[in-house]
Image 1 (cartoon, rainbow, N blue to C red):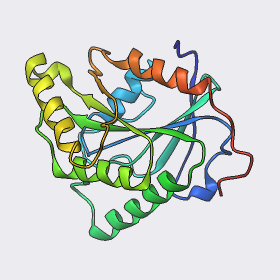
Image 2 (image 1 turned 90 degrees about the vertical axis):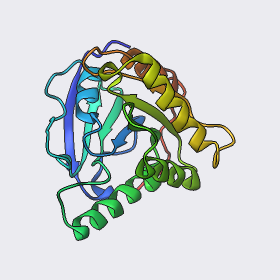
Image 3 (image 1 turned 60 degrees about the vertical axis):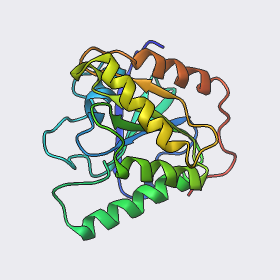
Image 4 (image 1 turned 90 degrees about the horizontal axis):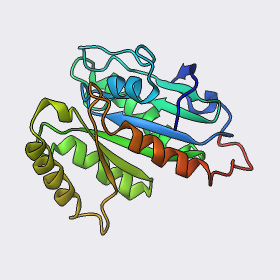
Length: 206
């Protein structure tokens, strides 16, 4: 897929204020500092589309971007914020969950995992929750350029094995590097394939 255009649409915390669900939608979410903004910029080939920051929790809203006027890319707040109050964490979790469970045109949730680490409980728990809700998701392992391919493969295998405790079939995964732009084409190809079969909801989602 060639990205011809990528435009910001809106930011908010309420499902009822989201754009009409007439285009297929793909959400990106992960632990704070997982490299989400960098990956989104690499995917869209737009250096500053998603704001990058060294401070965890920079993204605190549901951010919609329309790609090629054909589909929505959604940048969601990271879970596990390091520098915010428990009240704010609870509020963010509430609206993230509302978005994920109520957005009818949401085709896939890309869960970003830092490939440099062994399975982290917060990532595993989030995947389990998605499974309990019956929500479609795939795993995106980030920062593969920061270590050897052998180490990355080991951590990916460990994470997938951990999920087998709850999933009969573990979702597909991608290994990526925003810096090298590796793995991005595979994600875009998957999105393209899903888009071809998308049918807009007949009733509003909010």
